[in-house]
Image (cartoon, rainbow, N blue to C red):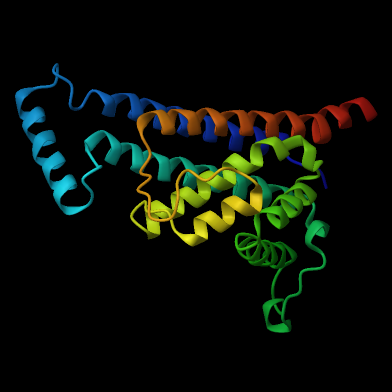
Length: 234
């Protein structure tokens, strides 16, 4: 079997398209509270600002609220993109997870495709809980990459994932879990214990560009290893 170049290109194309949507929404939200907005919109923004500051955090306003939502969406979307690529690679080269064990009842009466799909999903679920360095190694192994191909993007991505988790689980307050993950990957944390770190529009713009650069480097590496190399050999 070989990697389906059309399917790989489709996954990348869809990711970049979704990323453009997120960028456009981010630009749009900057103008929600601008003087050019309609009187009705301005009043709604004022009420929402008051609610956010009184009920959630004095540091939170409409723009930061939307930026926080976009930040979470950016990370979730990139995670989906990576999982789609891993699924494609495993379906093309199932021996990459040949050491993964399934119980007898999980294979009896199943087709080879069903067995591979089940094993892939189980493997990817376990991978999602791996430590950052272990995830990088396993991701690189499955994708057939050298860690050096994407290593420079990994720390910022993992920090952003950990920061996203603060927003989802801890109201954007720095906790010990975030600080531990930052230390594990050797990046400077965004704040100290207890700091409120809801992202700004600038943070989202920076994240979007970092993820685009990451995806572009991944595309180049996969293209070189799985497609251009195959053409040269042919």
